[in-house]
Structures are given as C-alpha cells and as structure tokens.
Length: 151
View 1 (cartoon, rainbow, N blue to C red):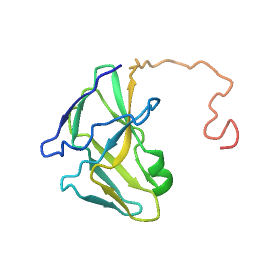
View 2 (cartoon, rainbow, N blue to C red):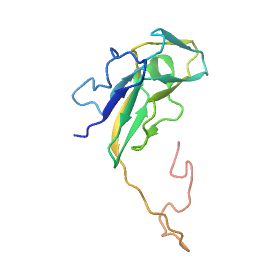
View 3 (tube, rainbow, N blue to C red):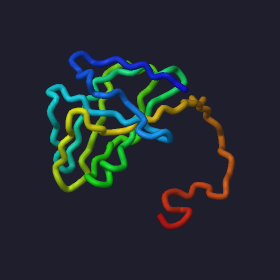
View 4 (cartoon, one colour):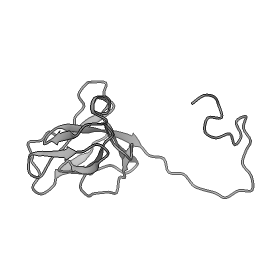
C-alpha cells in the first residue's frame, strides 16, 4: 500500500473528510469540494471552474495521482472533468484543485463537502526517447482513427 501524505490549505475546513474509498474494491478515492465560503458554487451549462479541495498532497516518487470524473455526476448531471484524467506529478506540492465542467443542460450547484471527483494512485514509468531511421512494421501500419472498424 502506498501512503499519500496530506496537509490542509490555510483556511480550509478541516471537517471535510479526506479522500476516501467508498467500497472495499474501489480503485478511486472520492475527493470533496472544500469551498472558502462553506457555501456552494454554481456551474452553468458549458461552464468550467476550478473547485478547491482544501488539500495539498505528497505523492511518493515513482507514482502519480490521476483525477477522474465520478460516473454518477456525469450520467445524472453532465458534470465531468475536461482534462480527464488529470495528472498530479509526484513533485507537485501546490493546492489540489479539480477542474469541473458542466456538459449538461441545466445549472448545477457544487456544495461544500460534496464528492466531486475520484483520485486514483498509479505507478509511473518514464521512457527514454530515441530518434531512429525507421519503425518496426505491424499489421495495422499507419491506419488511424476508425481504421480497425466502426467507431
């Protein structure tokens, strides 16, 4: 098990729960809004906003944290993350914010303490990039979008 060290931002509501796994088999820990005024934030259709969590995290070297949408908010309200999955690198120590977007057709209120996204901890492999004269061939070749069938 990996440990993610957490501190609260100055002025954050420390009563808002830390990220947590809601079931024993959950891959993502739910992350909550920690709004400065302890109120709510309105997202109009098509609008996106950075929602604070009130947290800063320390991710061990060799890992990243991915921020992903919550499926229930996406299906029921059209609330998603435009940069999904958002990546937090192990050397970042700034405030943890979640970019929420309302892709739905109605305004949506984000309430203080509400679960807004999920956090997945994942190992990182870094590659070495090398310029070569040619690439190995494959059956697919350079077939692009839709080249293997419908969709």
